[in-house]
Image (tube, rainbow, N blue to C red; front, top):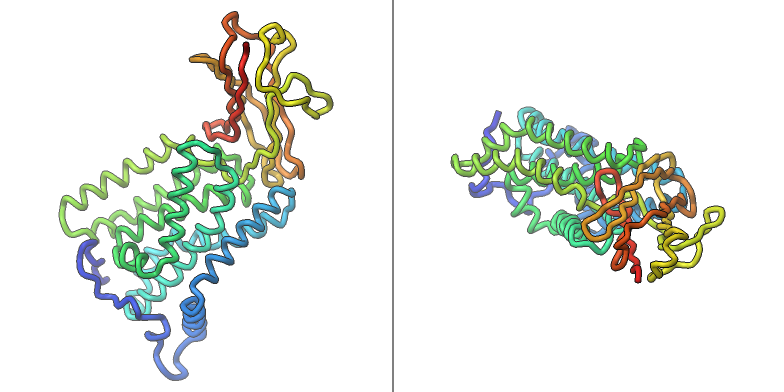
Length: 361
């Protein structure tokens, strides 16, 4: 088996080499090689085509989720088909290299993998953007996802920074696989987010451990191997620790307000300031949340006042066109209730869905 190229070694792959350049002439060329070459030529002539199609499919799927249409799950399933390839690609690549050699396999695998990364990243972006709130964590995560999508489409940068470097290529695979799982697993398998997040992280972590020997062998110096080895352990732990900063992709708050009345799921007028004398009537935090059809998702209303926090759980179900309506009513207030109040609607693992504020004076 050919040894992996060192991470910092000069690359011997010519960037301009295409799948078509590696296909043998004559009738012995297989149909799948020719189809792959044709697809690569098309995308080379129109490099914007696949990202645009994937981004459009993502918005269509997002719009269908908001309408409660089951067709969104079919679109998500089509997008999810590429996920196993990203997980298996390092192993498949080595097997194909032993059988066919690097001349065809390297550009072919790079092309297929880059195309699937573009598809999954651009498909996921509308769901991440739609679920994001104006919080630093959400904005940073969306910026990271957008940066990865742009990198996957910028061929010169992608080939220089990702495709040529085995260790970086595997790390980029891991990020794309994890993000795609976060978005697609709740839609396709109807998993609540508190189950989809650990499942995505565990599957990618196991995959990283399986590919660790090839990744570490591709590095030249002991210092590089040490850094990557430490990263393999710390990065999944860091992502789990920061899970509350990831947008709750697939959930969308269509209405949210602080009010003091509700009648048959119809909330009263929104209020921003409440007199202390009126607290005896209670305060209601109301939300309407759209979710994929068939998904049952827990949410928590967190009432914040200074350092005090009261948590009230609730449950939503996907498929409602106007969003599943639920609310939390607070009737008991402390003696020192004056000042700023905040109600955060979050998932059980702390992902922010909506933040509402009101003042008691």
